[in-house]
Image 1 (cartoon, helix red, strand yellow):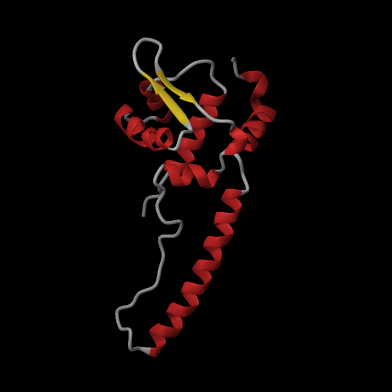
Image 2 (tube, rainbow, N blue to C red; image 1 turned 120 degrees about the vertical axis):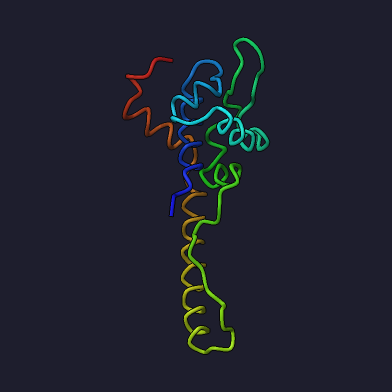
Length: 145
């Protein structure tokens, strides 16, 4: 099963936008991520609808950051890009009358709900500003502004 990389890719893009003077075109972002500009525009539209980025048309246009990085969390971005369910595994209800299935499903459902709540809390606790600060600490002197 292939991983859904939208969250990781869009976090990558948002930090680049926050550290870049002026807008970046979909083509530039697509080259950076080795993907298609149409895919970038489609995914970025969710970020624009959430108010995290703005787009400008014409010469010198492109995508630009539109928020204070302290105000947006990883969970916010996950939701804005239409992130999938956090876990792909789930319970099977092929035979709802089977007591073995009932016991298995109860255990799995409980564990998955607990894990999902932990992951949501962790994603909610990390702001884009924290990612940017960590990047700056590691590479700030290497990136032209």
